[in-house]
Structure formats: structure tokens, C-alpha cells
Length: 301
Image (cartoon, rainbow, N blue to C red):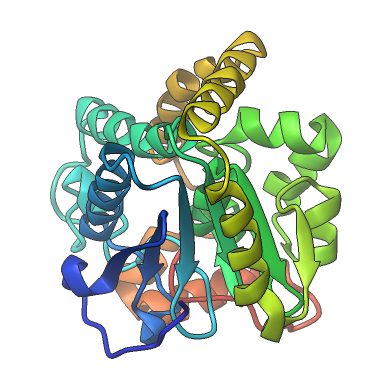
């Protein structure tokens, strides 16, 4: 089901939706941008998810990326605009209420994915970073290609741990490894992502689609009521572990972290983006933290 087509920033073509044999497929379709998602594309993804939830014939939702990548996260061209940020740097800074209102609504999209009434399976190939990894974290299951690269490099842009899914990361990986994931913010090979609980297993890249179909088929054979009760049981368990609270502290901490003051010797991504553009700002950020000169993802997070 992983089909590459020409795509634009139009959310109707940037996020494709298909239903077949009891399975729904949500496919990110901006391969020329490593499937970086605009905020309109996030809205489109949630519309597709709601459609799948309302359809009683759908038993499982598969989320994947067209082309060679799952999702490079948020489209960095839009970062700041969600708050009403003026790219010229001449206007007043966005208000705290604007930051809080937007982050609360956006974080609730990851909450709704986590609490989807249908099981969700992410198929991860290529880059899966930033918000792309948040999507995977919110899915029930995830299978990675052996060529996948997974992580939260966006944390080096001034977040340093104030992620939307911090509580989930600590639950999945443990406090120390979660702090490593978000503070050191390396992009990991898939085998390390398995060890951190970010994905379930790794398969050869040419077997990823088949592996996803196998798991989706096996889930689709289960009774509808059993699927619904099983998901509800998982939600109760997550709530009992305090997971609900992350959807409060997540948006508060993210809004707070986007309002930090940069000192003269610190890397200000927004300033660099304004002066040099998205690609140069992304590369500059990675060069600051990467002494090896290894290339890092630069088209979203």
C-alpha cells in the first residue's frame, strides 16, 4: 500500500486515505519533503482517523509514508506561524495565551490518536523524527525498516525535553533513556529504537509493507467488540499510570519552552531561519551539536 505519487502542500493530496478489507490506510504523501506535515495536514490526518473510527467495518488503522520516509515531523516553514509569530522579528512576540491555546489543541491531536478506538499500526521507513515520532509513539504498534532513522532532533532547537509525549517516553524507555532521547537528541538506528520501546521490531526494508499487512490482517480477524474492549482496557491502564496528565503538562511545557530567552552564545533556530532560511538553520543546528559532521534530517520536525 506504500505508493509514491506527486504531492503538494494541499492536505487532501498530502495525506491520502483508503479503506480496504477491514483496514484503513493513512499515508503521508509529500515525499519531496520527506513527508513533513503542515498543520493543515495534521487536521486532515485526524479527519481520516475519525472516519476510520466511525466505520464499524474498520478494525485496524495503518499509518505510513509514501516514498522512502515515514515523516520528517512538522514542516519547519510553518514553525512559529501557529502562534502568529512575525518572521521579520519586528512585531511583538506572540502572547502566552496564543501559545497555550494552539499547543493545547495540537497536543490533543496526539491524545486522540493515542486514544483511538481502533488499533493503530505505524510502518516506519527512512526518517521518522520530531512530530513524526510523536505519531509513532501514539500508535499501538510500530514496525521499522532496517533503514529507518528515528529520534527527536527538534529538541536541540530549544526544547531539551519539553516534548509533547515526555511521560510516554519515560514509561516506554525508563527515566534515564528517555532523558537521553530528548536531551542528547540523537537520531537512532532502528535497533536502538526497539531497545527504547519506540518500535516493536525491525524488518528488512523490502519486507516492511508485508510485515505491516501481516499484523493488520491478524488484528482484522479479531471480533469487533474484542478490539473495542481491548483498546478501552489499554486506555484505563494508561490512565492509571498517570498518562492522562501528560496532555496537560505537555502543552504547558511546550508553550513555555517556545518562549525562552537566547543568550549571545546560544543557537537561536528561529533567528537563523529568518536570516538564512529553513535548510541552513536546520543544518546549522545539527553542526553545533554534531562533532562528526554526520548529515542529519533537515526538512521538518
